[in-house]
Structures are given as structure tokens and as C-alpha cells.
Amino acid sequence: MSIVLPGEQVPAQHVNLKLGPGLLQLSSETQQQAKSAPVIATRSGVLNHSANKSKWWVEGNSRRYVPAPQESVIGVITGRSGEGWRVDIGSAHPASLDGLAFEGATKRNKPSLKVGSLLYARVSLAHKDMEPELECFDAQTHKADGFGELKDGFVLQCSLQMSRLLLDPKHFLLPLLGSRFPLEAAVGMNGKVWVSTKETKHTITVVRCIEAVDPDGGGMDETNVKKFLSKLDI
Image 1 (cartoon, rainbow, N blue to C red):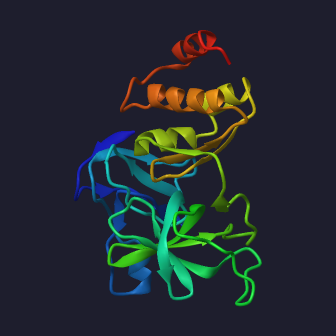
Image 2 (image 1 turned 90 degrees about the vertical axis):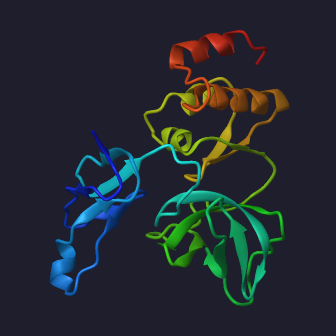
């Protein structure tokens, strides 16, 4: 784990290299050179990589979400755009969602989405000079796998760092809450979390816990969260 600054070269090399937020591979003239083209940081933060070093990204605490391919996001439909929709995902530019970007969708059989509808989607295309594009199915299986319209529930905003923590299977918070009461949740890399519970007090509990654990908030640890939960009537 190391700190990188914008413009600093990163030792990211792998046959199936995938770069996440905060990293950019410089262009080269030939395809052979492209495989070994240098990778630089585009923002300051902590450099991270997966266990096999195939995925690299910079963990920062930026306020603005910058879309990256294959990331899951939660967005709101803001309008129609030809055969698709415009979606607000909190980035500098609205994302586009094609009417066929759903499991089993055809020209005659498209989902009926309205302005204000909430979506859980995957970023299929992200480029600094183009609007991001979304899909509501898994890239490998072409099945919905949880992507699509989110109905009912409650959406809260958290820091981008907190959303990444919640997506970590080893993080304690969501399993801890799920052991106390029935809970459904969808976490977007854009700092939005959708939660659905059977009782309003449980939804309030989830929101307060996420706000307390958020590094931008209290930064509460597991022990203190358990003490906090023990004082609530849930």
C-alpha cells in the first residue's frame, strides 16, 4: 500500500490488466507497445490492487464520482433519449441507458421506466471524452443478477470510500445488521445505497449505522456499532 500523486507512474502490469478509478494507461502507437504502455495516477490517494494484481485502482476520498467500466451504480431516470433514457449517477455528465440493455429486452418488449425511477445498473462504457453508458445485466451471464429497477425502499447518500467498504465481503456492517432483522441492500460505487426493510425503524437503524461508520462521519468500529445497536429497540 502506497500513496500516489497525480502524474506519478504506477507499476501496474498484468496480462489481463484492468484499471479502476484514478489510473490511466498512456496511449501508444502500436498494439505491441500498448501492452507495456506506462500507467499513471490521475488523482492522489492510496494505491490498491487485487490479490493477483490484475486490478488496480486509487482509493481517494473525492466528492465527485468518476465512472469506471464494470462498476455498479445506483441512478435516477431524468428523461427519455431516443430509444433509451438519461440517468443521473452523480457524475459530471448524465449516463445513457439503451432500451435493450436489459435481460430479455427486445424492440417490442422493453421495460416501462418513468422519470424518477430508481435503477441499479453497471457501467459498460466510461471515457473522459464521452458520456458513460449503462447496462442492467451481468456482462458474462447476460442475466439480470439483481440489476434493474429498484422499487420501494430508501436511498441514502454516503462517501465514495464508504460505498467501497460496504462492497467488501469482509466488512462487518451489512452482515451484522442482516443478523438482527431482514434486510435487502444494493450498494453503488457512486456513493448511493438502497435499503429495503419490513419496518421503518429498521430502515432508520441502517441509515444511522452507515452514517456512523462512514469515514466522513464518525468512523465507528464494530464494537461501538454493537453497543449502539444494543441501545435501540429493534
